[in-house]
Length: 273
Length: 321
Image (cartoon, rainbow over all chains, first blue to last red; front, side, top):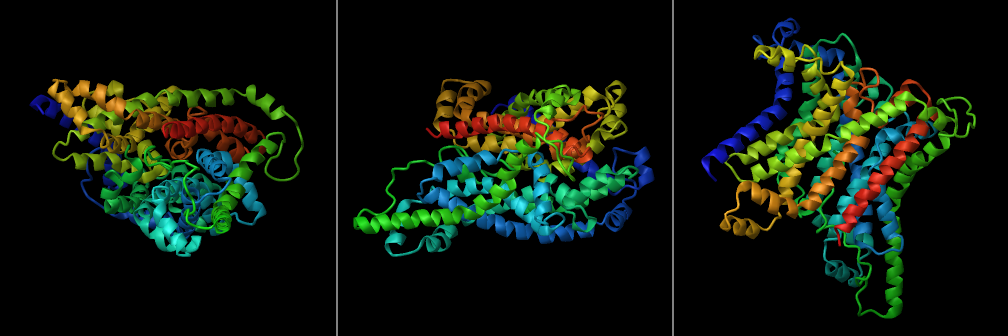
């Protein structure tokens, strides 16, 4: 590669890297700034780094409640989500039945509809089933909404498993359930990892459903609680920044931990052409 | 970022003729095994069907029913025929929401082109490309609620962006990005429609480009083709499907996934200037409590999404050969 091309390439990359990271960086340094200082100094790092904003955010922002709720909600919803995606994905990917194609296409069709389009009526239904303001309601709605995509991923994966493997197990008298749990699911473990990552990201960041279903403060998720903070007037920006930093910490940690997995060919098998 | 669709090659091959049951078995045994397999399949998809029926399919159908009523969320409801639809087409907010949604779509070409270029640059394998890839993707993990807050803070009239402009002597660039109707919409388009597409788009294209035959590039290099020629004549045609796919996905993100971002970025304001069709459902249904009327809007949004969904599925299957 010649020199000037290399120079411009780096220039463009650095520019975009800065553009994508700077707003985040700004929020990070602002969260350590004293409220008075932020009025004068918006751009530069704080002259004195303080933790006051975090203290206030945790004490008055009920953040600990929200984190507790996420710890309850997400793992439970995740188990249900994995169960639904793996069972349905296996059926669509590797079993033969008459309504397979129409049902599979319907599942794909359902993936696109916006949460807001459904929320009004979901709220209505949950009200009738006594599911509003309960963890169970959110868990069921999340699973229902996110499972079609997960099912699609799993179906894609399972359909790539050679038939011979399943056939020979069948000849040996293994039941479908046994084939699923002892042969194909162990083969799908890397895919399950991917499923857990996207499931986690979808659920952690979900707003419309939790906004409508979780009315009381004690039940709110982190994302919902943070969104509510945004709606309140008279909250100083450094305080807002501290709330953002606390709420982002977990997704960022997850990203750093799985960085290679997420950004490389990712789910290579399913993304590569 | 709920939707990431794999490329075709590894995708579901819908060959219904493949042998299901080993051929060596006796016919009767085969038949019973086939019936068993079919029964098991229905059992396995029951959890999915049950959940999606109750929480997705049924709500969707209910929208059609309530759109013909004047229900306000509690108490009785009256059957009012197409009255809601008549009110809707005379409602200025309806047309503004549609206009806003369409304007957001205009940002898609840029939101697809930039990731394409970045992916092509990163593919060159310069030192440190993995670092750039990670940094460019990083904002994506935060989710739209947090990103909306971050960019709201960033673009305020007294925020850091304007402070930066003033520091370098560009006072006239320091605009009130979020409080002027048209400017707020353009800010939304630039941030949501372009900036927030970059992270995923780049790694998506990068993965797709990894599948392009390396010999094509070598041959082109031997023929003396420059960087741009190779990009235009080899890379682009090779990943055409992925480009089309990202365009459709961007349409979905703009039409059907923007609520969370708008909620914290601009709250649909000032006035109705950043209300998309989707966001208006929230204002009408929950802030104003006009469920019947909001359902009429939902019906329109349903048809818009249905068209996009059919496009998407056709693209996936058509590419499947």
